[in-house]
Length: 262
Ligand SMILES: [Zn+2]
Ligand SMILES: [Zn+2]
Image (cartoon, rainbow, N blue to C red; front, top):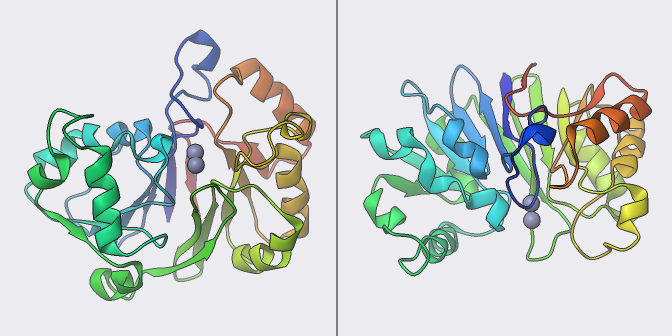
């Protein structure tokens, strides 16, 4: 399985020389196996995902905050290809999902009715995905702690598995459930919006700290941890400095366009 980070920034896209290394696009993750392509969240990085034509494509949403859906309308393949795309989320049923996206891309906020214009979206209930896509897909979800709700995903094929744990404000009560959830995964992806110090004044904002991620990684039996949802103010130099302090080569701040192969 191949994992590519198309957006590793949180909250709002940023640009400029201070952000060129880790990238400025908001959350978008592409997972590709021989049997399917799954895109987790459509932040602004979604515009750079090339949608494959030779296998089922699933657009999967962890939740519906701006930074996770704002790029949906801007992928040229999505509107250019005359084919069907599955759209799903474990956070809600398919009708609610369709309603959320229709609201976001309503004519008051966006020039075309994206959902009607793209009539080949198949809004699928999360539970139906393996049956729709094929037995090569193993997929599970688990609730996260985030204002408005959010879900973690465990996505795999055979022995290869990756887990997404964003967006999430970590709580010790989650520890055993989430450790079980990521157990044995080749990679899990952590919401590291804040440092411990910053988190003191950001309780209730729905995000975890980098240090909490390191502690969770140390307790886990997962091979690698990628940290994303970098704060918009966090420069390349600051991220590189924090990376030096992690002292753990298997835990890293994800960079836009970075590819991990399991
Ligand atoms: Zn977010
Ligand atoms: Zn969020």
